[in-house]
Figure 1: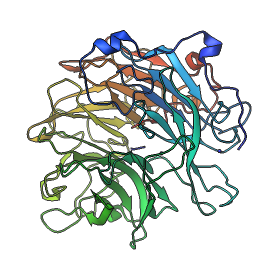
Figure 2: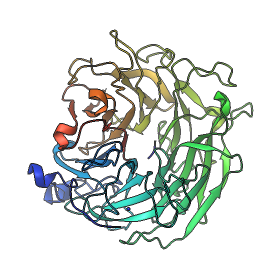
Figure 3: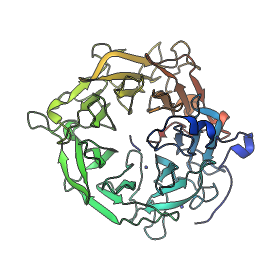
Figure 4: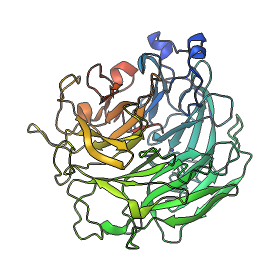
Length: 492
């Protein structure tokens, strides 16, 4: 899941000045590391991936639900909370100022938009009003990366009509969808259409590549978006999950192939019977079977429906659709749930297995793995305490064999599980120490009466481990805790 303002003010912004923490600038140590592909989430160019954490419901300078995004920087020892920033609309250079109900952080992504070698932070502000469009048009904002971290920014796109709600959660992604080497912004506008703003972007937020509007006459409602190279042609494609009705079987997965002219016409993914493969609420792409093509992974947490063409097990499931030279192969779709062999726990109604999925290689074996949140998992007499299951990838696709589960009552995990923590509402796999194995990051926005907290789990060749795991929240960040729901989203 993806992923997704005009006076200038300084306030909450950079916690470093308050805490005395310092950012790790690019330096000789990073230069000594082996050359790797440019990281789309390395904001300070030191060669380590960084993490952005959304708290769109947070209070900023007394403005309820104004929202902020916290950034924790990677290093040779992994993600370090001592090197952090907090960005809001009161940060210098960020468009407008913090206002109630703006929901800064409604969507979060990252990529190098201006091609200066530093990843930039892309933030959705779905509650923003605009002069041109009116109330709740929404906004996509960039905060520029640099050697000293994030600073300055510009608006990238406003909604064009009242209530467009541009950049709600799951309705924003970035990628090079026309193969020109510049990153493009893809965002849902007005609930039912894709708006592609083509890069490259200038420092004022303007784009020089024009725009493309992709209509869908089925009147869909988008649930999540992601970009990746599903057909291996070197151009990013866009995949979306959406529904076009209230019935449980109305969900679907749609694929738009990237071309030199932009996105091609949609393809609704179908199985061997000619029925559409069921979509879901969460989506990510990655090479799960190691064949060089990005695969589609969809979490479908709603397991209450039993009359579907492809019934959903109680508690939800995760679907795997392999990529190929011809695009996604729906006829080879595979499914894993909590009753699959090797998966911890058991399928139970309303567990929400797959509520959020993230794809990356956790154990360094060359196959991407899948983190699946189970935020409504009950255990030890607790309701909706939550957990996360990491499923393994392999040459045959996604499997439950060898899966590992963690929750707040797992030995070695800091804190203790409580009802309504919804641990696992969000997940993120990120290689913060550059060792080729992604660490697991888990959001529990219900923690401490909806203050929210984040957990980080190291990875080894055997997968994730609770040993050395740590947590952080408002106390670490120096932000307002009450109802902030920290961990509501991460950058992709």
